[in-house]
Length: 414
Image 1: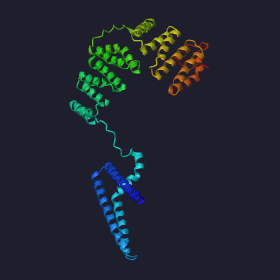
Image 2: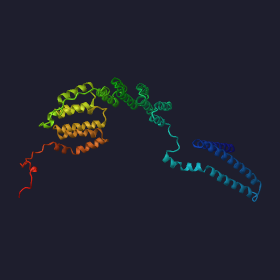
Image 3: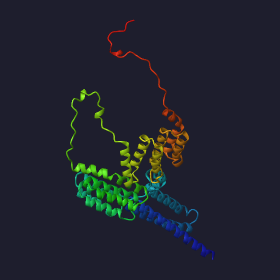
Image 4: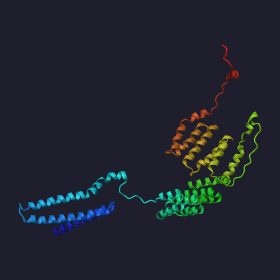
């Protein structure tokens, strides 16, 4: 029974050794840059080791037949042959053994022997585009997109060539819409594609309606997100951009007013300076804009500053700025800017130190790990200095001095 178990154990260990050796040979062959050369080395190693095993087996037979003196020659042959085989194998496998020993260190420097992640390459297409061969560039891009159909860089490059080089805005729109309609497309890339499409509709075709449709898709697909807020901001000012672009496409002669005669003889040029718009009319225009686009942050901030500067109404300015501050989709930097603006209005319009301090402390509480919190803390440290700067300094009465003293000739008499 014991002999059977020993036989089974030896057979298992032999199979395990053979399996490990086979796996090692396969792994070496797969990871090698020269698989044919490695395969030849492995075949040579197997034959050499098999021949050495056969030789040792024959020499053991001779050693069992002879005496002490008769065993000297077979033992010498065995030891010499084993040493020779070891030397030969060390010469054959030295490059692989040294690479295996040094690989843990080199892997830290070059990232190891793992093959790089396959990525699309557009250098050839960019070169074709540079030499004004857009059709050939499109062919090369489509070859890469056939392998990587969801690569946004290639899709955007293809749309750029279609819109900018081929003047095919419809084709560019089809390319971007095909990408945006995929349910797996990342939100940030979809927003970038639709925003780019809106820009092309404005700049290339002066088509405000198509630009609005592209931005409206952002609102419909990502409602109540920062992406939607950015689209609303652009929609609020799209009319102004459309007027500018239409004026560039349809240039008309601008009548210039007649100049003033003898302008150098006038006592004052105040009448020639452009008249500022009345604050009341400007505020009314801003309110009308906010009725149509309530998320227009730029106009709401301007309205708050008019309330504070021109009407001295801290309550109305606070109401407008707090509406911007409470919007959760705004970026921390913008919110901190509006809190600082509110603090400025409070200082200028007579609020106490505690009120201003409470306003600035909101920045520290809401964004404790951002640079805006550090800036707010520095301002809190010198807040009383800002209040002192607002105080009126006492008027200093100066003496009466002789006029035109610099126009007199000669030296003063002593």
